[in-house]
Length: 228
Image 1: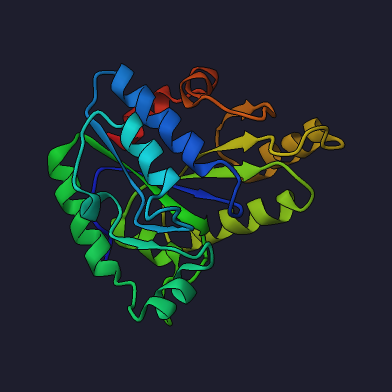
Image 2: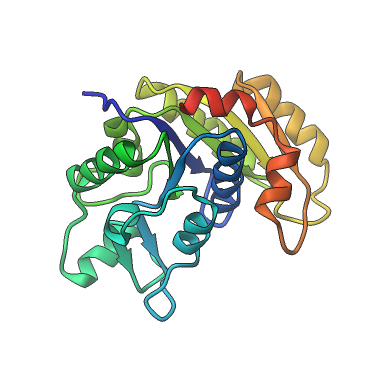
């Protein structure tokens, strides 16, 4: 059964492809459009001093501040797959807990920007994946494609998985995570032809990305409307 939440679910072709940067860019865009918005990272791994850089970045970009238990229900020290980290901690990630937190956040802000962990099919527990969470929330999905060798297969498989769950594929972002990727434009063109969804923009490679600047370079206006 699909959820009734407001917002958007941001997934990626892999870990480390720029989901947090794009999520923050969207939060800043929502704020600039006069919408109250809050970022949510249901599962975070790789804490440093019990803090998540991703969660803190989302909080800075949000116009609404909420408790840590709502914006980040599950947080783990090791930078490993969520279900493995949870097993080491002696707990099980419960999708219902995340859905309840999202429901509360939806009452606090116009829009909730949810950032997944890893790729779309990363396991959360013995049965469920991140895709099952996206389906439970019932949100449109934005795909961040890390432009590197292998990205065509990863992006197209993710697109297929999103469609198989009846979710709306809202658009995609090409994030150039490798400097000097051979035939970059040809790869982007191949995805434009096959993903059958708007390309919201190309994020050129930089050592340090400013989400506000990224937001200015992306066509996020339509997504702001979709998410609301």
